[in-house]
Image (cartoon, rainbow, N blue to C red; front, top):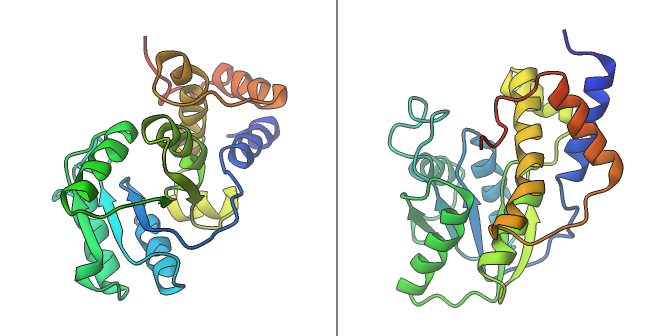
Length: 216
C-alpha cells in the first residue's frame, strides 16, 4: 500500500525531473536506451514532426532489459522506429553503452565517425530521466545546445504503462539520488534542487523506496 504522502512526494520528483523544454528543430536526436520502448515511439513522433533528420539510438542491456531486449536496447529501439516509419538511413545504432555517460560519449564518437556535425541535439529519454540525462550531456558535451524531450505523460499514466508503481517510484528516487550525488563526482553539471524536492526524496527513502539508490 502506497500512502498519500508517498504519492504526493513521487509527483513532486516526477515534476522536477522533467525539464519542460520547448521543442525545436535540432541537428540530430539521441534516444537513450532503457526498458521503455515509449522512448522509441516518442522519437519516431518527433522525427515525423520534422524536428531532426537523424537519430542515434544508444544502449546495450541492463539487469532490467537483458531478457526483454536480448539484442540490446538500441537494436530493439531501432526495430520499433522502423515499424513506425523512420527510414533505415536515418538511424544509427550505438550498442555498447551501459550508463548515461557512455550513452553520450559513445553517441558523440559515432556521429564523429560518420562525419556528422551536431550543433544541437534533441535528447529523448524516459520522463523521469530528462533532467539527469540533460545534466550529464551538458557536462560531457558542453559545446552542443541540448533540448530534452520525453513522452508527455502524467505519473499516473506512466505507472499504468509500466504496471508497477513501486518500481517506478524506486526509479524516481534513484534518479533524484544521482542528481544530488553525481555533480560532486564530476559526472554531471550542478543544478539547483528546491528544498521541497530534497524533502520529498528524504521521505520516500525513509519509506523504503530504495532499490535504485546509489550504493556506496
